[in-house]
Amino acid sequence: MPTRHIIAIGGGSLLPESHFERYILQHAPANPRVLFVPTASGDSDSYIVRFYSSFTKLACQPRHLTLFNHPANLAEIMADCDVLFVGGGNTRNMLAIWQSCGMDELVRQAWERGVVLCGQSAGAICWFDRGHTDSWGPLRPMSCLGYLSGSCTPHYDGEPERRPSYQGYVASGELPAGYALDDGAAAHFVDGQLLEIVASKPKARGYYVRAEAGRAIEEPLATRYLGT
Image (cartoon, rainbow, N blue to C red; front, side, top):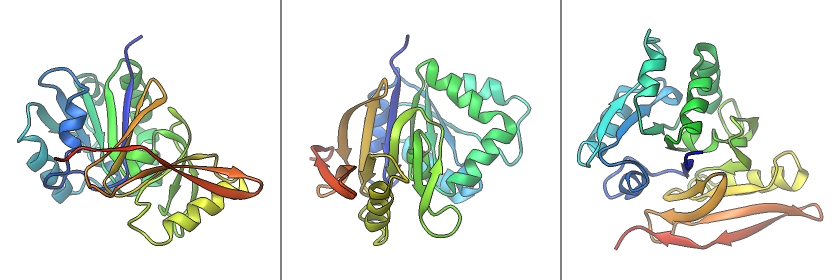
């Protein structure tokens, strides 16, 4: 059984000095084929440009996959990558599109053969049992792919309504206990277990949020800063 990595980024990747791109490549084979999937942003051209601006500076082979023009060789493209980087945007729309074209099953096959799965925002919460999203209206729970147990919310420090909304859903039991990630923080899981929280900003943090006696308990997690 290959080692399975998932790196869930709360926000702030594909920016100058984000550090996350180098961290991701440390856990991939040498000169890896990195496939960017920007479905959640509607295959945004500017997002694709940002991806190449970040990854062409590094020792890897960057490429991208757009699904709005469904490629006939989708399975072949997915089979030819070492890292799958999923962009942010609308999680609900992304998963619906993936299901409609069989991408969800191809992603599961990639995960099972040891492709490094990673991404930010929508590309972070999609790996969990449940996500916390504003994909349609106010923040609310949604079911996701279920590769990681529990729930996740991104942008924990970047959007004022995130913290109270997430804690409210965890306290009520509408979301299971899970991980809250600041912009600039990422949770790295190996074979389904949390390895570490890393950060591209000195003050970014990750938290574990659980329910106890009908209220949310927020536990700060040790966070390693990736900068100097």
